[in-house]
Figure: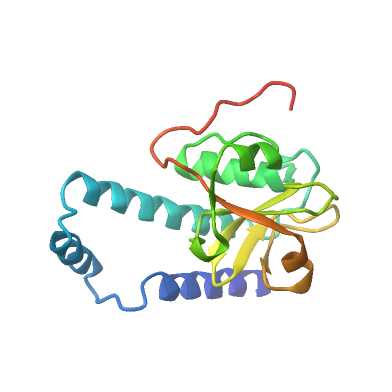
Length: 188
């Protein structure tokens, strides 16, 4: 029961944070704002696709809470390591194939400032005395979801906790929600 309560709370918090001023018909409000700013047509559709896919990504990732960590793992059946989890979520939800290793994912994505983080962005940490040795998916409100370590399960953590704050390496955004970022590399 506890496993169900956390995802439900996160989804409610995410929805409230993502659109705190939304009216019952939020699409008409979005249409009005886009029209006022002259961003209709193609840009309007692209914007909706990005928001929908980002929301789907976070919701899908939360659905994997409790899956055990497994070094080299990249499926729910076998377990996930951190980069395998991120890669699987992007591939399954957005249709993008990110590189396999955390440092490769950092190199293949756009650097952003921590203050620019949005749900679905990647957050990187130095957990093994080397840069970009750990990755997770930002879910909002200063929290991220990840496959932490051997003996643990996929879970949500607070980036402002002292452990994660000291090890924060940077934030990245996947450049395109329309096409794959990179093809799989051999040997990983």
